[in-house]
Image 1 (cartoon, one colour):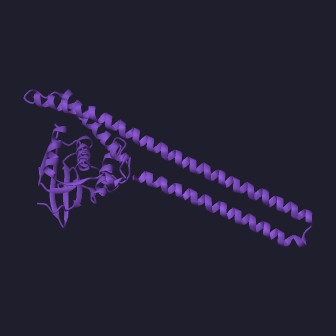
Image 2 (cartoon, rainbow, N blue to C red):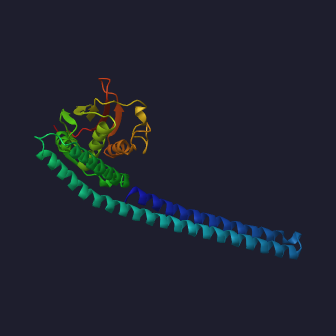
Image 3 (cartoon, rainbow, N blue to C red):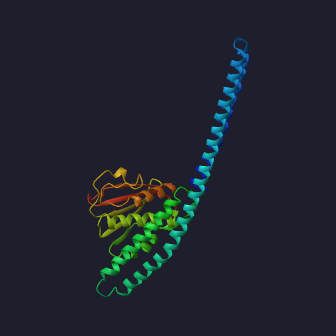
Length: 297
């Protein structure tokens, strides 16, 4: 069960509890008021007692009726919103899935064209087309991950080599020199970790204006440390704010912030973490990934 469905179920239960509690208290108040009015009947005129009883009956019944009406309306709205959210999720999942297939096919065809023309003069149009297809495909993957981000059951961890993952991604950024320095074995969800690496490399290429990315893997104190470093233009601002909230934009010309936010959240679901620092060289940008040590060598 996804977090969203769980939330709506809790909201529905709380609504029923609120309705039962308020109706019970109102009924008790009306009964107590009528009983008290009967006990005081000896000190009041009969017509005053009849008038007071009618008033209590009318006010109590009206209040109970309004509470029931409001509770039923609230339950109906919760049910409708839950159904609407489920329909949106299903539509969004189908749409992204249907769009990913032709985009992936387009990217593969462009990559083939670039490979066929590797001995010739580079074609900037093909490079731009590849960059755009990678960007659109990455945005769709991010959207799909965001839609089911809170469901940890989607993650399927398996042992994989960092070098193998990086090798598969190199061709998607022909303008970048992507180097691997220190291969390590990690136990992770391959699709999710691919998404993390893609977002970090895309961040270096687009926002860092880098022409090189170095990915270093090491193990230390029971942790697997992976650093994605680029010698680009770096970042001037609060590193601690990056990726903490969705749509965080440190500058007006920067991106939406979804990529770094999603990368941090995915790593948290893998019992890992992500922090951003300035490289030891003092130039560029470094994303430091920390994951539990897989124990494999």
